Image (tube, rainbow, N blue to C red; front, side, top):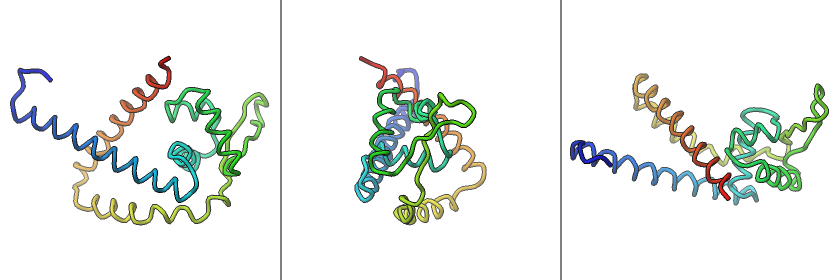
Length: 158
């Protein structure tokens, strides 16, 4: 950190980095527990989340959303397909493209694993003004882009 900033700002930045690490740890542990309940690794569980939210995706689109390399995404899709949770289908317009889609029947009942978290976050959000929520949303959106870029860099490194 630069030495020409105030001590208060230094402390705030240090606290922000620490809080971010704590939040990251809590998120990883939560999704590890969810994945364990579903019989999945965390990356598999998060890929299913992407497919549920965005609908059927190509492997390339999964690479974009996850920041993972194509070889990593290919293995990920293979594992999910072997577990019967996704299926590969040919794109009707371009038969060279393969689309990955969720088997929603296989995932029925897993949504309730998130009920307590969603209820807690909903209660938390009620304590913020619209302006504060806009700032939080901006931060999370921008921090997510930074995280994806860092993931891409790590996955592309030799």
